[in-house]
Image (tube, rainbow, N blue to C red; front, side):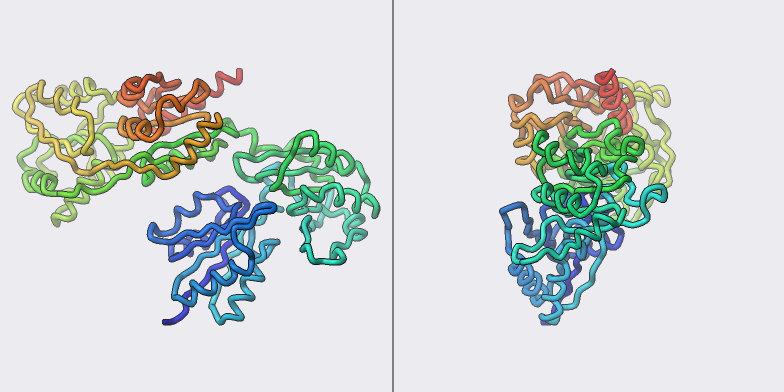
Length: 507
């Protein structure tokens, strides 16, 4: 068997959006992902579902695997023919021991590629509003380890040079040795009043910044009980943070929000919430999959000409229906005899992507409004209506259409099944009172959420956000009233409702 290949990939300092395009590309090829403590779990979603994942994180005084064992793991799995992605926080070659792993691969005759990442010294500083260079203050920048190898007899850090360089100094892993670092710098000539900052969990929504001077920062750390991991920045540029601070000013900064949408659809909501500063935890609750028996969908497609209307209530329904259409060797031209109703702008947009303009898009998304909109366009009595929906979709819409005189054929075009990914994490955070919001985008997400999380696990400090009346009704069935309900029953409407609530709370 020929050897596999190893990619040493820099994952960036925490914000999953800072992964490079090349990093994302090679993750999509992985058979195995070996990842560190500071790597965002969201990046693992870029790997194939079949890819194995092995955590080898290192924290203070606790190493999951020693470096030698990590090296051997990479070699062994590559020799077995696997494509291995070694996902490392920051950049592999900046205090990441990537060179040690690369040398082990060279000695074993394993081919590899280094994919650089954005290092914390630059990214965490930028997210804290601190430019590492500025022509008014300094034109040089130094990156130094604050935690040298334990077996070193003498420090390799040139303290006199650093203290007198006028450079911005970035010390990685420097919290524990902060007093010694400050002492060495001032002893060799650095002004003790030089501005200094510690950045904890830089670039993430947990980011904390502690600002002082070289003289005062060690005491401030004790008073604040400031813990690693953190980056230490020293230099006059730190003073610019007062004007350039931007990341923590985002409207949802520091809020921890659970997104219960199906994993395949969560990205739009999750990414938008993250752009607004929130920390997002995806608890999919449901997974979308094709029906085990597609006969009903196939039969409906074969009888398309007999239907007056096709009513699409979700983007999932649109995707499932057109997938069935393609499987039957047909395309949008097969719908020439049908009128189309799309519920909601997202569903309407998805229908348009298949080259069809919906005949009806109700302004409101309630059952009564849908029936009224259809009846206004064409008398319902005697009309045949096809409703491709989820297997667990509420019956109120087909029942109301039937009551209006239509003949309704409801088929399960797709199935929603429970998905409890991240359930343990969410339960733990709820128990610690560390969840701010839980978002619900459909009745099925509500039902599946409470199948995993018992209602008594929620306290009054957790706010529930609903995308619309039907979802709110289901939430109320479990004994809760949503703090907010979207005025426009869309993802953007849901986000606007949360923003409005948060804004009013700050006033």
